[in-house]
Image (cartoon, rainbow, N blue to C red; front, side):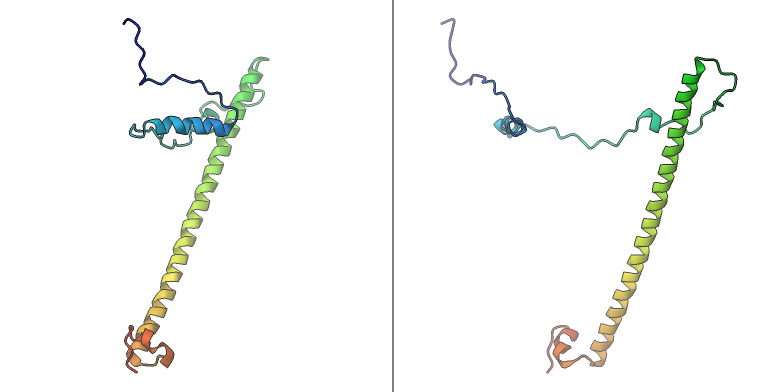
Length: 150
């Protein structure tokens, strides 16, 4: 009586995945064992830039290459210079990207305005054709709103 076996519990079988497809199959089987259990789907994270590409806007200590530097300060100078160049490159790339985005939005507004003008012109032409009855006989039904008077 001290040792009872439970037939309801399944024995855990260790499955070794040999291929990526096996890993995917195992994960899907695990998910589908309990379909009522909610699945955590992570939100897409915003791209966080490394510190080199996200430096402060204002750098107070810009060094010259030989201004009173000792032998050990060259490596510090080199890293400061590298970060400063990376900062300038990042700022220039962001400015270029903003410029391209602005040009794109201006171009899209111009295209939308031109398309609206074309649509309005065609709409007015159809309205005039309907009212004056100058539609060709083949298109009269379409011009008169689906009513055939012939």
